[in-house]
Image (cartoon, rainbow, N blue to C red; front, side, top):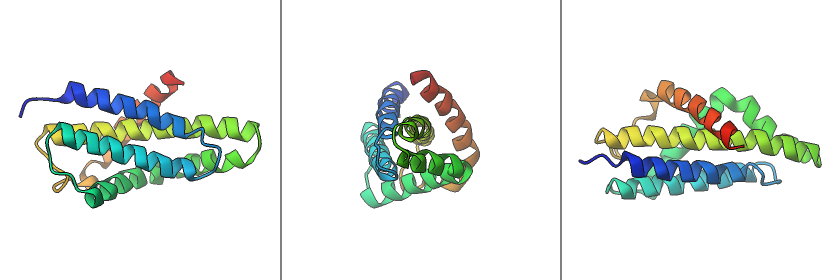
Length: 151
């Protein structure tokens, strides 16, 4: 299979930027629902790019598992970013920024992990989230810097 990583990286970068916008949704936790939708759409585009079979159920499960892996290590920051939005003006701004950075970084990390998996010949059916935890955290750090640069 010919490498499609340039196109895949373009997709991930576009969705990273889009997901950062969800951080500024002023209603707590609605931002996370919107984030999952954006990440599922990104996964769908990547699957299409790599000409792989798509399964809505499997893709939702993969996104949920990857997001939960990131949230478990970043839980306090993620919850704080969403809950602080209850405080008018200042809370909305601070919460929006921190949530925006988390959302961008997590989308970038998930996208990069998926690219690695698909480039190595993987599919949705043989994706093993437990095997990529370390790589996911590394990609999250890269994504965090990328998101901060975009802000």
